[in-house]
Length: 454
Ligand SMILES: [Zn+2]
Image 1 (tube, helix red, strand yellow):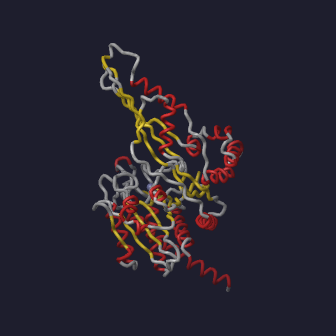
Image 2 (tube, protein in one colour):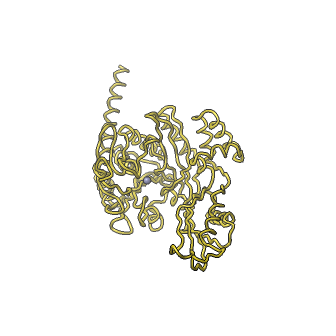
Image 3 (cartoon, rainbow, N blue to C red):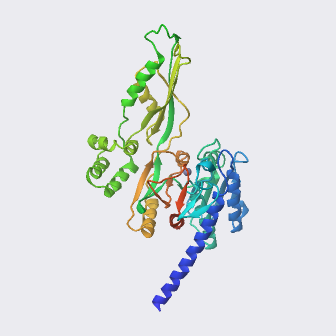
C-alpha cells in the first residue's frame, strides 16, 4: 500500500512537472519569436505579451505595469503581493537580444525550434530563458495560491545589450518604488558543464566596473621632410609601452577568496595549490604570477587596463599633430575609477600625454555573500544536482546588476541553466540551450524564489 501510494504520488508529481514544462516552454517560444533587437525589434511587444499572460492568469491590472522612455523600449514590471513581512525580492531579466542575421545562422534565429535535444533561437540563453521562467513561476505560484512572506517583483527590461534606453537605469531613475527590493536575482550566474558532465553552479554577487580612457598627445606638426625630435606618435607609443609592462596590484575580495577556496577542490597539482595559497594569502607573488598566466585568472586577480584603439596623424607626408589611444579598464569592485586614472598618469609617466575618462563609470560594489541566499542556492543545487559545488564568481564583464548594486540593491546572478563551457553561443550564431537544462533551470529558479519568500 505504501509503495502504491508513493507510485501514485510520483505519477502526480510527474504530471505536474509536464504541465509546468509545457507552460514554461510555451512562454519561452513566444518570447523567442518576438524580435527584440535594437535595429528592428521592440521590447514593448514582448513586454505586452508577458503582461497579457500574467493578467490571464489572474494578476490584477494594477499590479502589471508597462513602462518605458519611448514606445519601442517598454519594460514590464509585475508585482506578486505577499504578506509584506520583508522588503520585496526582485526577479530581473532583460528582454532585448543581440542582433542576429539570418544569413549567418543555420536556422532562423527568430523561429523557436526544438531539435536534437536543444531549443534554438536568438535569446535562448541570453536572456529569454530566464525571462520566460520568471513569468512561468509567477503563473505557477498563483495557480498554487502561494502566499509569499514578501512581495515578489518581476522586471523584464530593455537595452541591456545595447541602445540608450537601459531599462534598469531608467526604472531606478523614474520608478524606483516599483523595483525597490531587499535584493535581486539576475542573469550572470554560470551553470557549467563540460563534455556533457555538470561541473559547477556559479553565483555572481560581483562584477568589475567598466571604464575607458582617452590618451592624447598634441603638437604643432609640420612638414615630414624636416622631422624634429618631437613626434606625437613616438611620445604616445613610448607611454603605451610603459603601460603594456605594468600590472595592477593583486587584490582579492570576499567573493574571489571564496571562489579560489572552492575552485581548488576541482583542480589538482600546482593549480590547486596556487588557488589555495592565493585564497589564504593574496600577497603570495609566486602563486599570483603562475595563476596570472591565464588571462581569465589575471582578470580575476587585478584591475586591468589595455589599449584597444589607436589613431594618429592626418597625412602621409606631414608630422602628426595628434596621436590618440583608447585604453579600456576593467576595475575591481572597491577600486575607484579616479584612482585608476591617477595610476595611468603615473605609469604613462609623461605630462604631455593627457588622460581623460570617456564616460562616467557606474561603480559596482560586490554584494555580500548572504547566508540566506547562498544557503538556499546550495540546498536546491544539492537536491537537483547532487555533488555539484556552488561557487561564488566575480564577472569580468558587466550586466545590469551593476546599476542595482550601485543603487544599493544587492544583486545575485544565478541561473541553473547548465551550458557547455566550450560551446557558449550567447551573442554568437546558432544560440541554443539544452531542453533538459531549460526544464531543470525552470525548477531550480522556482524552488529558489519559494525558498527566499517563505
Ligand atoms: Zn544578458
